[in-house]
Amino acid sequence: MYERIALAAYGYEMHDARTGRVLWGRHTGTDVGRGLCADLTRDRAGAECRSSGGGPHAADSPRISGAVPSFAGAASYDSATWWDGDAHRELLDHRWSGTAGSGYGQALEYTGSTEPTRIRYDTAALSDDWAKGNPALSADVLGDRREEMFWRDADSTTLRLYTTPHPTDFRLPTLMHHPVHRLGVARQDTGCDQPPQVGYHLGTRQGPRPGLTGRTAATARG
Image 1 (tube, one colour):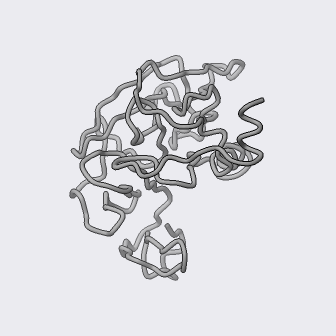
Image 2 (tube, rainbow, N blue to C red; image 1 turned 135 degrees about the horizontal axis):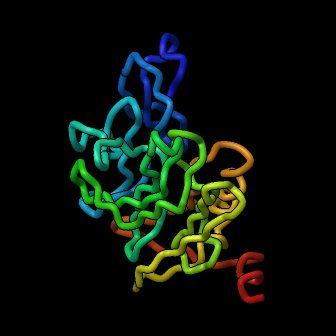
């Protein structure tokens, strides 16, 4: 994504991770300040990408629909979380209140339509970053491979911890034992507050599941 549009052929684009080559891009002519790629729906393998400049697109470029997924009229393209019982992610967002001057934390399940379903919402969970709507932190801190959400209260004196109520039969090592996830968690509150990732495919049509080896395995055994 680019802010200096006059110097950019594309407002947002996809690169080959190995070579850096541009695989596809879209010209917008406007500032593209926000965006997200995550495997959100079981309808197709791989990530779906959307931004404030357009989308959603499949990772290999085809446009999925003509509108960025939105809930109650508010587009959602900022953050994602592994929250319910399946392997793909949910949208992590907030419901903005202009009267309160803040937003209330929510998780949205995207099934391929333009209107996600809200599966978690609490008006006691207030967001950060003004209209961007981030939690204080999202991470697998309790260790069942789903992520927890930390939101502040109304006067910012308390952090509220939310954990998933959804059962799951999908098992793999806790995300915190994966170095890429740990680095992403550290980066959230020291740099760019985007959601943490893992260094393997965790989503629809799940491939080989990672094991624990070396120092990580020894740490896990205690």
